[in-house]
Length: 452
Image (cartoon, rainbow, N blue to C red):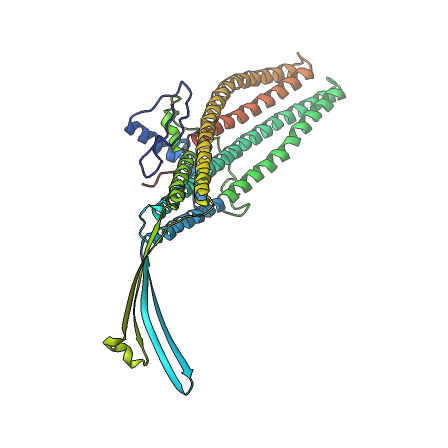
């Protein structure tokens, strides 16, 4: 069973969290040291790719992206709301001063007042404390939401960067094949002049050259769009990274392998799971708050001040006035509103529990999908790499045999098309494998660090 629990300050009690079964091949847990090491290694997973440019881009995005700044502002708002609720536990004190001039018949009088008023409502049944607990849970949920933005943002930057490097590789492959096809076209033109071939062959060679050349502008446009996307993700204007990303580089691959035996507790690293936990805690506190509202409330109030007919008399002992008031308020008849409010909050708690269960199930699906995609693309890449080697050898042999007049030009065209197709597939799948790693890190909740 997958039980995502933590310290009391981070999660509701175990009996409140729904129990969600994990896949049978997942381990049921692990010792605290290994779990801590796994969490640490996932916090900055992009460093596993050993690519300085990628690391710089991710860190820049985490500092300057507009979605990050919005989430940070939401967190500040939630923390301020905690302070608002906490103020209800403390007495309130106010100061006042006034001056009055009145006239009756033939007499005129002045009255001067100055003093302090204080009030306090003892939280006998925990209504105010429950409100504070709910606000604190909301603030922790906002922290987790900020972390969720970090996780998604880091993954989006990495996937865009990997796509850009993959496009650069495909562009290089296209240009290389174009150069080879142009050489073949030149060869057919020489053979045509020598009367060794026909115009049909030359036109076929020219068509192949133009088809390959037509792919170049599309790849260049996609490259530019990838650079613009990365610039915006890092909080910069489109085009700001053109110089930085102009040089071609290989598709980055992680230097270490993730263990496929994933502890079930790893999913607690996911910030969306943590946020769902905290929403349960907040809903539970609001149930307690609504229940406490059904019981009597007490309040103490008092005032201490000065009252005199002249300003000078305010300093005299006879001007001191004081008052003390205690009161109790008991709800008697409210048409069942208080009990209904408890049911309202209880239903909200059940919604939070169901939402938590859905979040955990989605997390399990994300991890399983990422693992399946990674295994499939790795196997696909092995096959395509072998196919590309064979296609390269076939294209070379066809070119040599055509130059010797041993085969017709159709065989050359076929081998060249096969070579271009397989090389592009290798480049695309290489990028897909790297992106699969990124999606697995994201599915496991990597990309943020819990602030203790």
